[in-house]
Image (cartoon, rainbow, N blue to C red):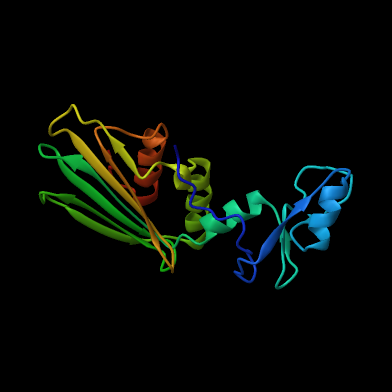
Length: 193
């Protein structure tokens, strides 16, 4: 299954892992006990959409899963991706959302094999939003098709200040792959397929 890279229990504000779930609905005796023990926070009987699901014990901030997911995409600083095969050569791109520039290249080198350009802050923010739309953090780490020799390989690295999340495929793709290639091509202004 898809491995989740978003830890919902980490406070989006102070980064503490010391959080407890907020429970809604009419509490029974057991929940009262858990609240007394500091294991949950009771959120009341009214349940509505977008309510906080976690409470930070350190700074008091409350948040829900969607805010955790948004925060995870906001932390992506660089996307590196490559796609290609033995016969058609490889396309590789670096989209730097912090320094606001993109680099595209094609190997083996042909004319105009490397291109660099700056992007606007709004473009970087829109790119993050579209990555979220592609659910890219939920892609599996590996997509393999062992029966095929040669063919096409691809890699995607999502980098934050603290870690790199690596995705890889061999003649096998996540369902959003074509949309991802279109997004990269649009952002770099160059082919990526």
